[in-house]
Amino acid sequence: MASASVMTQPAMPKATFQPIIQKQTILSKRKLQDISFDPAEHLTYEQPEGVIMMKDIGYKDDTGVSPVAASQPFRLFSTECVQKFREEVLSDQVMQSCLYKSNLAACQLRGYATKYAPFTYDAWHNPDVLSIVSKIAGVDLIPNMNYEIGHINISVKSEKQALDERAAVERERKSYAEDEGIAGCPWEDDKPVVGWHTDSYPFVCVTMLSDCTNMVGGETAMRTGDGDVMKVRGPQMGCAVVMQGRYITHQALRALGAQERITMVTSFRPRSPFLADDSVLTTVRPISDLSVVYYEYGCYRLEMLEERVRFQLKLLREAHTAGKKTDTKALKRFLGEQVDFMQRTNREIVQDEDVVAGKQPELDIPDAKIPSPSVEPDRSSKRAKRA
Ligand SMILES: [Fe+2]
Image (tube, rainbow, N blue to C red; front, side, top):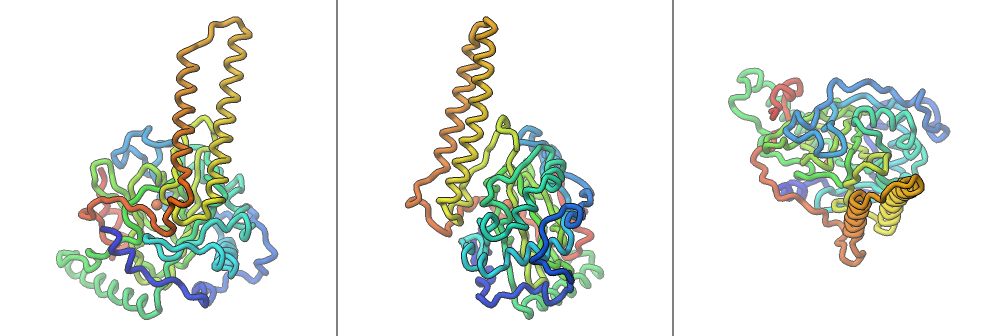
């Protein structure tokens, strides 16, 4: 079970937690507090090398809101932009007020963008950024809720732990070269960062905020339609991966050899209120300020309903005014769909006292086919199985 691995995650960062990258790299001579998000400067977009379609991994094209399953990692944000994200995200205010831990992840920062991170907020609302993410996803997307802008996962290790991992990886690489892996992989028993799960929201864009130079592993494993596994490479700093995580069972595999790994996850839903929105709050309720999440979720779901009702009213009135017979079947179908929509919305709003803080649900899926982190990064794609 994945739960065994998550319990062995590094302890929560202490109050003295210092982002390692600031000591390692001179990123910008400009004063970061003076900058605001400027796509001309902060976007360094390069098309992903490829996109994996739902049908490539054994799902039907219409499983979700797009035929696209996931992208390969692609360059998205400049180094200065990443540095500014980090400055906002790792500020004392955010670390003190927006830190959540759960049975699945020891250190998460959530719901900070509106209040404490104007640059991050602007970046994920920027039309150019939305256009890039939407184009890759194959459907016009907007951030699911402001609360879900820039969800942060932090994993930190001691310098010794990272060095030991790196030495072990080097040893394994040598034996790999000598013996093409016949002796097996020492990471075979290693567990993922978070167990098999589906996301709560249709699409995610995962952006890497750490220097991954010495990192091995850190891929995303996706379960294919027939239960096999396919891996997508983890992104480098400033790069991102887009995935239709609501519909694909997946997990983040362990990353070895790096002292810190900070990822920023922004969730999206279709812009059009007329498309399905299968968003749920299952995984986020236990790690959220419920008042804020219920407010934002309630608002946008009601707004969707408002738009749908307004449009339906227009159709009804126009038909009647034109002397046409009322289409009973169509009217009943519309009403039935909206009743279902409202019932699903209501189910997600669980009474506050019934939500157990910090207890995220896990999927009970056997780990038999979990792939190990690749000891030879270049071979990871060749070793990935395809349905
Ligand atoms: Fe996920």
